[in-house]
Image 1: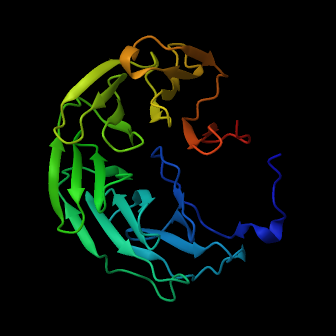
Image 2 (image 1 turned 90 degrees about the vertical axis):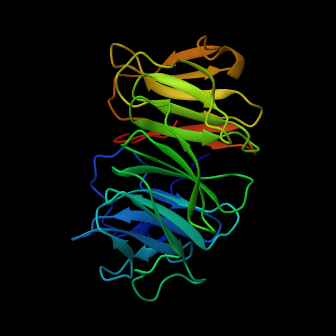
Length: 276
């Protein structure tokens, strides 16, 4: 159960980004693996077909073109060749990756999405609507885009501080966000109106929240004493968790990764050697 693969079946020699930003730095879909990498003079990420395992050449083609480090990447759920990237240069770029992967470095995106005044640390595709992308930046703004036309459809400015995480529910009719003000919010993504909010975890470090398949909310965060916690909540009673569990005193932010088919949540944290 959970066997590690042999060395020759792993991806080796990838210089993963050393950015202190709290993101997973990687994204996977049925065709490709994408990883944000260290790059001089701008930001880049590497895209590899699943079968390209082993040692990756140091001069392997990258997706480059950002003027600052890339902070977050996300594959489009409706097209396995399309990926979005957000960067410290305040721009969101959407890229087309050819089948079989890159043979030369890609610097021309399909579209540039320009709105944010500060770095963009979160990109998230809408689960059901085609070509709809959500971005959030350090300017406390959340923007929902029509990628086909490059225009901003909805601008949401109800957050008084940085947005740590965002998640659509199963059909995309609700949006769940966590914010540096310690609150968790459920919004209507069409209007940007807050439907309900509550204090999530008492600690000051980053919190994350996801919708589970049947509408429950799963969160990770920290207690006042900086212990790592996770909780399960109902949207109708956000402020009163069904269950709240304290794990340990490690200081890495935990990322909840959800598999709706098995109904399992995997928790992995920065600096952790185990996945729960």
